[in-house]
Length: 170
Image 1 (cartoon, rainbow, N blue to C red):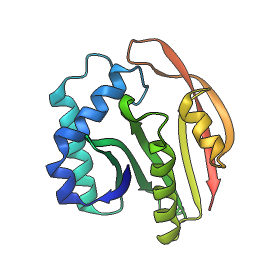
Image 2: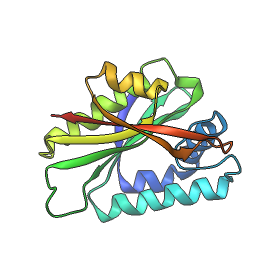
Image 3: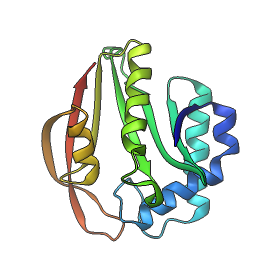
Image 4: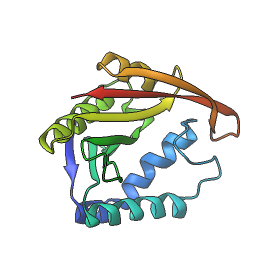
C-alpha cells in the first residue's frame, strides 16, 4: 500500500474511484456527511467539488492505494479565517472496507500531518464519531480528545450519533 498526494488534475481523473471509496464507506455505515440514499452521481459531484478546491489552492488531498486502486483518502484544509493562519482541519478521512485494519488510516494521517508541518501549520483539528474505530486510530497517533458533542450528526441510516473533537499540536 502506498500513500501519496493527489494533484488537482489527478483528482479530476480519479473522481469515479474516489466516489467508489465514498460509496463504500457510506454503505458500511460511516457518518461522513452523506445518507444511505447517496447516488454515484452525488458522490462524484462531491469529489468534483473537492477537485475544484484543490485547483483553487489551500486544500490538499492524499490517497492510499493498494493493488486494486484507491482505497482511502484524507484532506488537509487550512482554516478560512485570517486570525487562524496556524491551523488546519483534517477532513473526510475515508478507508474502503477492503483496506481497513491494514494501516491505510495511519499512513494517510501521517502524510497529512507531515504536509501540515511542511506548510507551517502548528495546530490540527478534526472530529469523528465518538468511540469509533477512527477515534481509536486518532488516539493511537497522539491526538488529544477535546470533548464530545451529543446528537451531532446522523449515521447513513438516520440514527443520531455523537462526535468527538480532537486536536494535535505539531
